[in-house]
Amino acid sequence: MASNLLNGGQVIVDYLIQEKVPYAFGLCGHGNIGFIDALHERAEDIKTISTHHETVAGFMADVFYRVSGKPIATFTSCGPGSANLPICLGNSYLDSVPFLAVTGNVPTSQFNRGAFQELYRHYQADFPSTVRAYCKRVFQPTRGEMVPIAVRQAWKTMVTGRPGPVVLDVPFDIFKEAAAEEAPKPEEWNANISCRCGADPEGLAKAVDMLLAAERPVILVGQGVKYGGAAADLLALAERLRIPVACSSSGMGAIDSQHPLALGLIARNGTYQANHAARQADVLLALGVRFDDRTSSSWLPGHSFTIPPTRLIHVDIDPEEIARNYPVALGLMADVRTFLRQVLAEIDRRKASAVPEARTRWLEAIEGYKREWTSFIAPGFAADTTPIHPQRAAHEIGKALPEDCILVSDIGVHHNWLIQFCHPTRPDSLIGSMGFGPMGFGVAGVLGAKLAAPDRPCVSVCGDGAFFMHASVLGTAVEYQLPVVWVVWNNYAYASIRGLQRGYLEGRELATDFRHPQTGAPYNPDFAAMARSAGVDGVSVDRAADLGDAVRQAIAAGRPYLIDANIDADQNPQGAGVWELPGLGRSRPGIGGRFEPGR
Ligand SMILES: Cc1ncc(C[n+]2csc(CCOP(=O)(O)OP(=O)(O)O)c2C)c(N)n1
Ligand SMILES: [Mg+2]
Image (cartoon, rainbow, N blue to C red; front, side, top):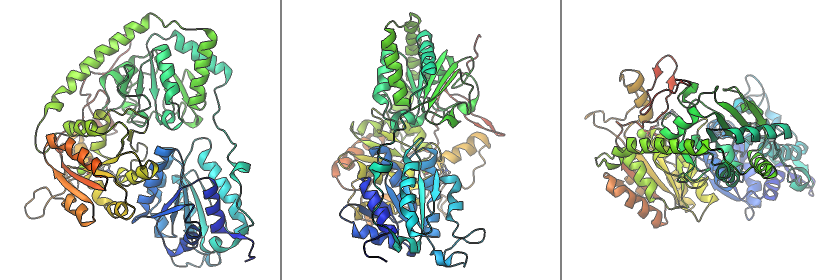
């Protein structure tokens, strides 16, 4: 190699450093030692975190972005190492979170020869086919000189438009092959690109007409508002026109949940005020939200939405999501922050300060719905049982978290309880995965949160099933001195799925709980002892009254900490929406019924 040329690995690492990527998370293998060598050379400028499972690295990368707004890179080997990645690529892809996955592959000279760990029976070195459906794009440079183009294009694809994870698949030899005199410069290629496009002027005027004339408007926010940095503009518009704001699970925290205009969660287990207001709205302004089945009561009219007659204004950066599930009175492709600023400026221009009379009646009616919801949920707060009532558990945990805390939830029934009874005040107060929903997201993601926000308390609430699946995180927290807290929501079951067997299959339970083979008693490892064996503090909690203090103590400890919380699995969160498993039936709302316009 000519001595003045950087090799492929060096070009990638230099580009990452220029993009101010502080970390690479991953796991070694023979396929990526060339890349790790390039990371070693620049260890002062980019820190490497070596995990005990590739999936952990991917979930960490995902949550790192959700907290910091900065994409980072992962590194994995060829074959099985990178085959552990699709689960986290899928997770980030469906939730529109960018990270750059640098995957190793077999040497180009061995393509099609069936070398160790080559996927070759359909096509040579075929990792790209593996991840095709799971990421925004795959790049596979097969000569050194292709690396600079691949890395800058990969970065651009990842961060522009609707963000998402991108794979840079690099054959073994290319990491070491001469590539270029220098890496591409972000300021020449990617730093000056903006995708903050606004709505077209006619569409904007129409949107403002509709909002000003609306009698029963509702704003629905998804994560586009949070990750688009639009929370302040959302608040300004809501307050200006006195429009109540509901959120999808991914949009929680876009508005402080204690704000008088906040309706809370729209979903099967969402609040009465959110579902009942949104399904009666005359105009619904949906911002950066994609109307999935769990947000929409499985699209059954009259539960979460009644579109039509509700007139929907749907704004999204990705037109693919507009009119996917509901007809639109007005669909606008736009960045939500730019759109909100346009709306505010147009209201100013029109000097439209008066809010219609009808708004006061609408907000009063909503206050009534809030009171009904408050009395519906009241009994759960008083429950004082062992195992701990899940509503009480979520409430105690929520109360114990400081205002600046980042709570990362895993997937399962505990997530449903948390989104109902923890009350996020900031866009990143409560982080969850809603598109792909892989178990382990919160178990591992909390480590990424801590690296992104070292000065803020970071807590994961995760299922016992998911924690056991990814218990290797204990070691990573110790090795890198990451003082995170895991609250293992221990209900001795894959409880969310067992709940479905009970609800839809007349209780025919199989393969959903954990039992001791001799006694038949609930079985799980002693998670607190498991934590201690790894050098992590661990305690067990059986009483609701002790849970809050345990969380406070764990945060104050400033060391990695695990709380094994014994939680009742026989309760399911009730709400004002429904969910349908086609062919098996649908759940019944816990409060209220179906809204039928005109009746
Ligand atoms: C990797 C993965 N496997 C399976 C599932 C399907 N699934 C969704 S929730 C769940 C149960 C999770 O159990 P646990 O972690 O104990 O949480 P709980 O529901 O009991 O709160 C399962 C198996 C999934 N989402 N992800
Ligand atoms: Mg469980």
